[in-house]
Image (cartoon, rainbow, N blue to C red):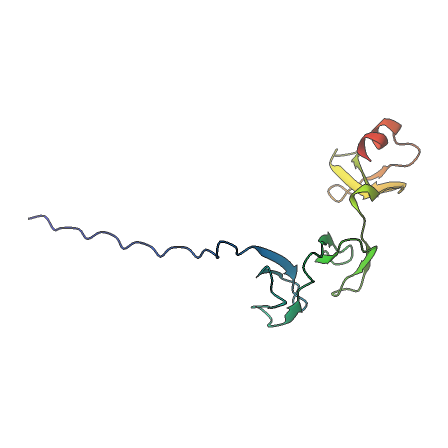
Length: 145
C-alpha cells in the first residue's frame, strides 16, 4: 500500500524592506566595513565592531576612492580635493572625472587611468611604465581626456 507524501513546508518569505525603504551606504568609522542603512537615519551602528557612524546630511553627494597606501575603500564628500586614510594616514588626491585620463599599457594593453598631466603611469598588472607625456600620441590623449 503506497504511503501518502506530505507536501514540503513552504520556505519563509525573504525579507523585503518597506515600499519606500530606500537604502544608502557608508563606511564604518571603526572597522571600515561597508554599511547599508535606511535613508533618513542619522547614525548607523556597525554589527561587527559596534562603532556608531554619523550619516551625512540628506542631499550630500558621496564619492569613493581606494587608498594608495593600504588599498582601503574610502568614502568622502564629493568635491573634496584630498582624503586622508584613517587606517594608514596616507593623504590621497580626490580627482573628479575630468581630472583623469586613460591610456593602454604599453606592454599588456590593460586600460590604465592616471592623473591628467602625469608623465608616465605604472601598470598594476605587469608593472610596465607607460610614458603618457610628450611621447604619447596626441590623438590618444585627446580621445581619452
